[in-house]
Amino acid sequence: MQGKTIKAICRELKISRKVVRKVLRSDETEFRYERKHQPYPRMGAWRDELDRLLSANAAKSQRERLTLIRIFEELRGLGYDGSYS
Image (cartoon, rainbow, N blue to C red; front, side, top):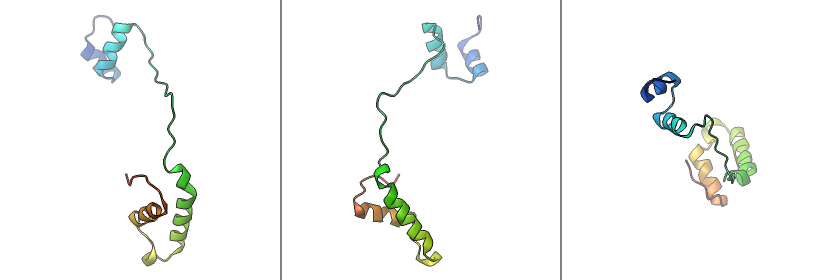
């Protein structure tokens, strides 16, 4: 890619200018990120309880079914401290 501008390289390879500059300055062509600590999802411990709530909800008639927000509130009532997002 000799003689090309950084902007032209970015357009051609569809990568950011920051990455192109990093490669040109360091002479490395491969960058890896290794996570040292894998966080566990908050939902993992509550998965069985959620499956139970969802299967019980699916067995109800259409008018009696709970909304997802109501199911979330049920989990919160049982002690789940995660967020709705």
